[in-house]
Image (cartoon, rainbow, N blue to C red; front, side, top):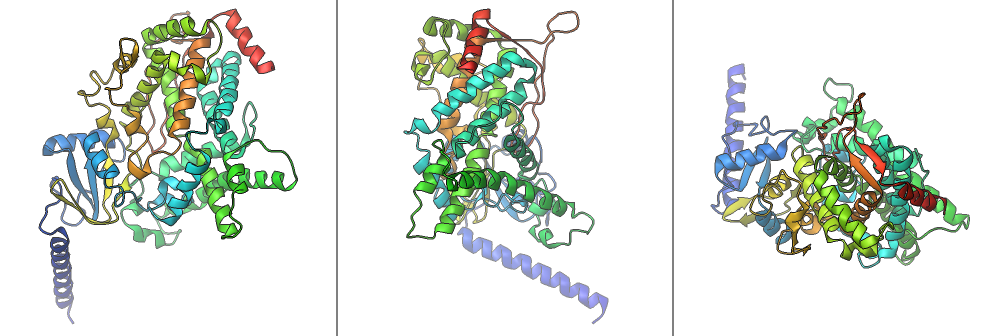
Length: 517
């Protein structure tokens, strides 16, 4: 056959394939249309337009252009639906969670995160691991986390007293230490614990690889099978190194715990201890052990997202909104009378609680401007609001847009705890940002109660003990600070400076006495 003949045959085959896809789509959609969409390339769709950074801002702009809060994006054949309001996200991802709770198989799985609960597809393995968390870290059992919270927060106060300039690192170390304690009952070194350092390195890698579409292999999965030495296949070399890092982060503390158990060494209560003690010996013991190991690893790493970012954002907010800091301290001094706060004080400190709530909203307003959360994926065809949502659709909830909705949160760029208060008490009529920040439906964060608890205790403790103010230049004059955030699934403030000083000599003495006790 001549070249012209081959060309004609290929064109005819391509046309036949496209027509057959159109016919199958029409049959599946039952005549319903996809959500509104921008003009797209015939083969690539919107693949070249999909943003890697500032996703939520771009998606909100597209929604405005199309006059719809639900829109469709075609990523080289991969369907994506963007939901721009809480009402739509809640109705689809919560109300129809049975078919909109899976995950997209991204490049992150190739780098060793395939075991992690957050990225698992909706199925039996996901159910088993989620059940472990719900059973052994139940919100009603505060003994599993609050003693560790007080211990780690008090360690943070000591570090802020001795080396305030390292506050961002101290926060990461505190959250890592708390996670290790809850997951394995393990104590951490006051500084530079190797397990915390390994976890931070692994999470940085996840932040790079976990962004859907960050690597072209996410859009063209066949690229996973190309040889590592080929030009453009550098992602495979990265994946090999990252996988070893992930496995060390997951396996090392769990193996250490099992060795200590085998030697008869007493252990503090923890998620892993409780789960191992409750293994059903009549079932598949190695599989149960593997599930516990994986889930403990997720307990260890999950707090690196919302909790660390939120606490660091709290410091930035106190720096930029000093009037909030002053009002909080008035409430703290009136209620506590000079002592450090405890978890039981929360009901008596509504303004501090409002600060913690606003921090959750604010952290998403700024971090969320760079990246959406991990999206859901649909496992069946669905008709929603008169639109067809095909099986395999990636569903993105634009939390950034939701938390900037001026009907719910007037003046969204202003850090205002007052928006959650009425007559000095918490106002339940204002939407709780946590319902958005911690996820939707069956993919909501199972450790939300722990994240909220440690965030509140940290905020209350720091405000009771320290003044946070602008850094000083060489002449002793205050310097204005602009806080910016990095991009990625796990995003934190870029390094910034502030002045942290104890509120009084008595406060400093109180902190040192706690450390010495």
